[in-house]
Length: 57
Image (cartoon, rainbow, N blue to C red; front, side):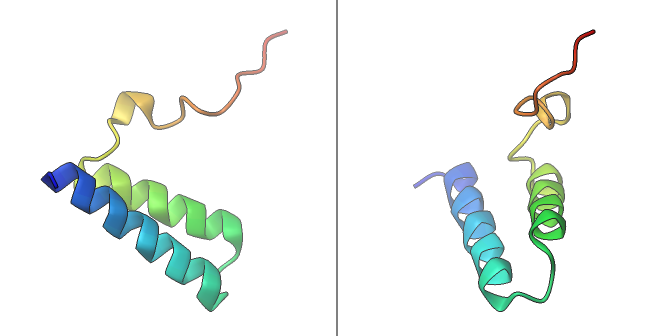
């Protein structure tokens, strides 16, 4: 298993632990996971919001 794969799995497990613990709201947990992925280098800064739909007028 490569380092990025291990970091991704650790991030997902941490996120699931926060969901189960229930101390934070789900949106705060998602932002924490996104910031962790950015800091660990799993997600590139240019693509951090690529999954969100854009609003076109």
